[in-house]
Image (cartoon, rainbow, N blue to C red):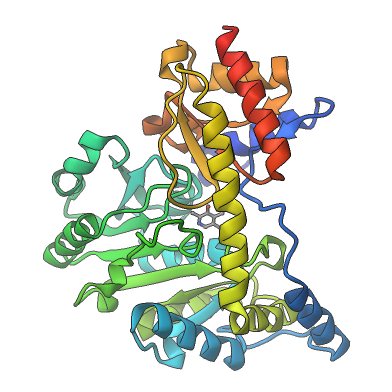
Length: 382
Ligand code: PLP
C-alpha cells in the first residue's frame, strides 16, 4: 500500500499542464520557471574543469568550504550580515534547502503560515513533515492592507513559522519593507521562525527589494533560502543554500547526509565561479527578463479583458482573467487546445490564484510577443 503521506499530497497542476502541452505540436510553452537563457560560459567552463580535475566525489554534508566562504561574502555584501562558516549549508537547490529546513524545524502537528498565492512546493513540503500549512492571502490590494491582521488571525499555539517569498513566484510581488516589518514584529511576538525564500532576489527591475533579514533581531529567527538556479540560469546544477543560526544550519547538513549526502561536487565549484562573476552575470540576466516582461505586458494590454499589472521582478506575469468569464483552468486548457499556448492556471498556486494565469517569460522576446498576440486573440474571440 502506498503511504498516507502520498495520498494527502496535492497534485502539481503546473506539471500536469506542462505534460499535457507535450501532446500538442508546435506548442509555445510558458509553464515552467526554467529560464531558457544558457548557463554563463564561465560557469560551464568551471564545471568542466572541476570534472577534469576529478572533483567528482562526495563533499562534506554542508558543502565545500570555498563555496560556503564565497556565500558568506556574498550575503554580507547584500545584507551587511556576517554569517559564520557553521551557519551556512550548501544544498541540492533551494528545494533541498527548503525541505531539509522544514524537516529540521517542523514536528507533526505544527502549523506553518504560508502567504498565498504561493509556490505549491511549500505546502507539500510542510505536509511531508506531518505539519499543516495555514494560508493567508497577500495578493489583492485589500489583502496587503490586512496582511498583519490576517497573519495574526492564522496563528495558533501550534504555529512554528511563517514562509515569506519575496519576490514571489507566481505573482512577481516584491513585499514592501513595511509589510516585512509587520511580519517581523509578529514573528518576534509569537516566537516564530521565518523562512525567507529569496531565489528571485536578483531579478528585480526597480531596486525595491529588501530582505526581512535586514530588520534588527531577525537574523536569530530567520532561515535564508537561496539558490543559483534562477540567479545564474543554473537550474540543472541543483545548488542552493541555507544561511541560518548554527543549530539549524548544522541540522540541515546532518539531515542532508540521509537524503542526498551533499550537493554535486563539480556543481559546487561551478557555483563558486558564478559568485565570483556575479555582478555582470546578474545584470545581464535581469536585463533580459526585464525587457521580455515589458514586451509581453505591452502586447497583453491590447485586450481590456485582461488585467495586466506592472512588473517589478522575476520572469512571471500573473494576469487577471476574471473578465473573460472563464475559470483559470478553463482558460488554460482552452488556450492550449485552441492556440497551442501553455500557461499555468492561477489555482495551481492555491485558492487565491483563481481568476489568474501565470505566464513564465522563458522564451526569446519574439516568441513571447507572438504568444501574447495569440492570448489576446483568444480572449477577444471568446
Ligand atoms: N523557490 C521558489 C519560489 C521557486 O519558484 C523555485 C523554483 O521554481 C525554487 C524555490 C526552487 O529552486 P531550485 O531550483 O534552486 O531548487
